[in-house]
Image 1 (cartoon, one colour):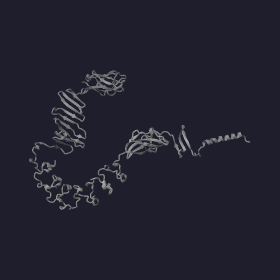
Image 2: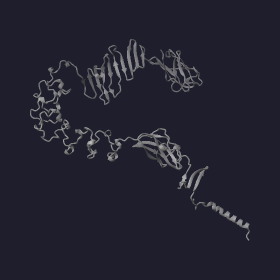
Image 3: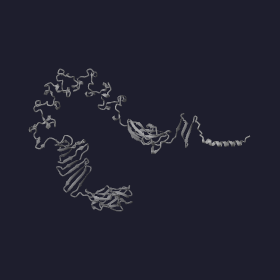
Image 4: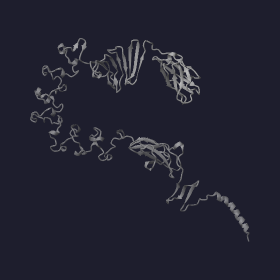
Length: 580
């Protein structure tokens, strides 16, 4: 009988041999999941369901995935009917595209800073490579993107961009693309139709009915030649009231249809005759008598060349008011025609021409002498035209009512040109320059010259009287530093006297750290450059503390009123004072 212990030992040995083979083989190579599912967890949280889903379908579903990264901002450009949105497939701060990305949502709103929600979702981009979509809109909108994963997690919104729809203009609509099917009923109103836009090609046959034609809309100029036939005119529709004055011309009348028998006495008046209808062939000999001609009806254009001779002109009929301006030139005057008796008394007096305007040309660049043009106050003026396209007013030399000579350049566009006024009846030596914003008056004094500069509105003015002194500029002088102050950079601290009597201080200096409030920066050695009273200026300095520069009558320059510790550079670039 076999020993049970030996059998147990043999079986254990066999299992030890088979165990390594079992550990290397696939344990589910021929396995299946029947009516169930496998779950994948991480850190105790469900991450995926493989197999039968809760709704009865079979799939691999990711759940509780991580929040995806934020997409980069899209670009938005106008397009017809909306805004074209483009995303390049990248994510903020260079984050990689998540493997569980489902789509990128496109949200739009007319409100800046809106929060994406189901109500703002317009469309999606369903590929991680990016894409282009259109947001339909008729007004400008703000657009932002949000990434969504297969487990439903959404990223934060991207940076928002804004744009609006492109306007629909004629250049963007192909010829013939808008047909009857594209137009809504009653869409075309009078306000939508450009002038002269509707011609014969655009109107369908029989489309124009009585109800579509506005009152008095069809005039003679709108009807094509031979368009009105017997079939289109209602019986008795055309009466004397419907025939516009001048509408029946020679082209509409059959040859010889208007005879003496067909015309009632007095029927042919000016209102019934079309322009140019009465030609030489239509007039009977002697038919045109003085009583048949309306006043001013016979003009140069209606008289055939050579028709009017001395026999047809009544004595004294041609007077000055019948002659158009500039119509009689040298070619129209016979030799010796202009005699002394033909000129009014005083018209030409020696070398002077009175009572008229003399100009070098009719248009373009020219000079025009006018005795009293309204443009310049009805004063004697020499007008000068530049002849440029944007010239709106000529320049001129004007003698005004004060006896001054005013020089004004031409005016271009809507701007106001400057002017120069020389002398006057009261003071022949004054010169005044005026611009749109300021005026400068130069006057002679008994001992020198006075210059007054003022704003046109009178809010600011300054006078400078120079007397007999020379208008010279002093030399730059170095400031005498104190208490460790020294020059800084390329511009040393210097001062000098100016021609207007002021003194200027310039340059950069270094003041040592811990410089005392009220400390002495330096001294102005030249007494002629010292102020008559204490002058105070703001100190521009490297420190965050605010302070003031005091320039004293004894020449000392101090820094005071400091709000904190002083030290570092200090600038004197805006320091200027009067010395008297």
